[in-house]
Image: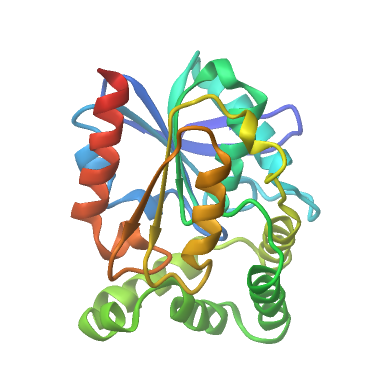
Length: 266
């Protein structure tokens, strides 16, 4: 199994699928690379898809407890160097979108295009209360109970009612690959501390921002504010989906994101 050894001593697990221009896919809080499973078969027909597990998650090595979004962005930069990627398209979901923002700011010449899904650039108000609530739940309940509750934020009621087996399978998969409790709390603290609203106006890469219309984890106004702050960014709301809109409506998500990539690549 391929791992990249970082300067910090961390070992990041990664996978590469397909051929073509490199496309780096960055997962959300507490999720491993499998959160892109509904995208890889389609994307890899056109792009070299790179997925990985953040430090302390999935098959990557465990980490020191305190970690920031910038730390995870630095890990990602070292991963790209390890693989030998000079430049790539970058797509990030939730926490992954914040890591993607930092990459676009830190290494602009290496970012061909940027996709931010279910994103935010400051955590005032609702988002801060939600992240603090998740930390308190993590400190109290089991990991399985935490993810069962989190699905109420991540997926729409309609999807959960219509696809109970898929929801159960997703919970089981996430629990197996989840970080240790302390590391997951650290990721949520990193979410809470992420603030880029005063910097993302410097992003030069062509940018697409998407969000589910019924996202209760991070309501659409957060994504809209982020898109408005990035020069020329496109903003798309995917109706009838929540935070994990790439899971709820994969065909529509794939079409929107590929159309954007083809336009940039052409």
